[in-house]
Amino acid sequence: MKPLLVLLAGAALAAGPSASAWAQPGVSGDGATSAPARADTLPAPPPPEVALRASQPSVASRVRAVILTVANGEKAEPPARSAFLNCAPVGGSHPSAEKACAWLNRAGVDPSALRVNAAEPCTMIYAPVTVTASGIWDGKYFQFGRTFGNDCELKSAAGALFDF
Image (tube, rainbow, N blue to C red; front, side, top):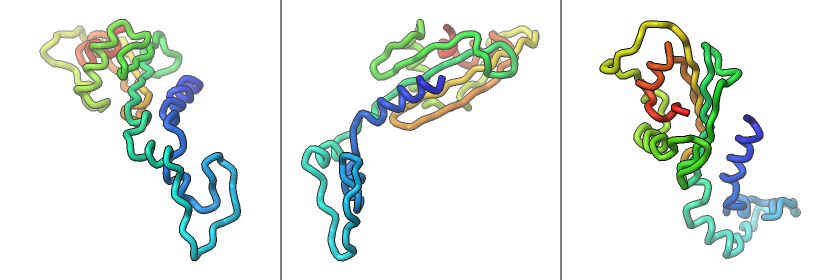
């Protein structure tokens, strides 16, 4: 799962160097260091293309990609099934990507929003199911996990999000 998270993080870095990297004394935009700046001089302004990119919303702030897993039992490893969900644009391996993205948009990737709906009857059979979600949402990394008493409770709380 770590290589996939690195891939997701790569999308967040696709915007290139930030203007603050250009403004740091002793650092050039290509990653090479130069002589330290003197205390009585101001740093050089960034090149126009970097300043323009810094003033526009970054590509990273629009990234909405999530890896979802479901595991049988009280531990998240090994997952019984997993899905990749991309919400900007909607796609990925999740069979109900639009519904899952709509749920995440409403919940705001908040794990406390996964509440079992008491109006939906579920059996009292204990067959634990552990779910995890990790990824990047609007440029910020998030991760959460939760164990439910059984599949019915999971579907009651998360709807189509973990239905794959």
